[in-house]
Image (tube, rainbow, N blue to C red; front, side, top):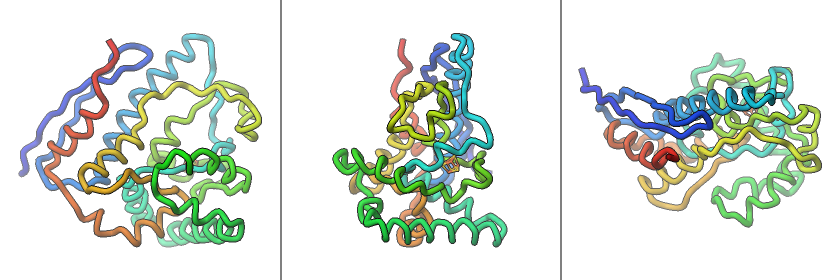
Length: 247
Ligand code: SF4
């Protein structure tokens, strides 16, 4: 049996610091295995953040059946891309085929619209990211995982989806660039932190992978998914990027 190391840390939330304890096995650990920890941190923060909103008299407008935000450009870190690909590979064949066919259809449409090259540019270059989300949204491409206007992978959705919660009226989300949306604060940019950690551990620039292109991207980067590090050191490294909670 491998040793288990307990790692405890605090995150700052609108309701004050919140303690999180994780047990990490001292075994070779891949980047994708950090994702459940990132989800735990995001959900811990958001629970407090949403409770704070309600205490202030604001209701969360997001509900199952409203997939307005699921036509936005979602880009995720490499660990999350591997995590989503792994989840896809474990689905029954008919669902796996459905989602990969939807991704291929989106790729084709992006190609026709002349946007594919920019979408596939993996760097987090600020200039590139400035207009891309707006142009992507204009195409009205539903996320491959959006089914009956609900998220078909809800428990596994990436952190950018997890921390997108709004209190302004839901109908405004149909035109997020023309309307002013009031978003629940989420100051934990975990996708960015996972990207940063990947860049440091693997070398190279920080990379974001478009969610709609995950299957094809992962197919050409399998070697990265095979890399591993001692679990406790990798998790400590990730957690240290969160910084101390605000005092
Ligand atoms: S993964 Fe789920 S929540 Fe995120 S954009 Fe797709 S359908 Fe929406």
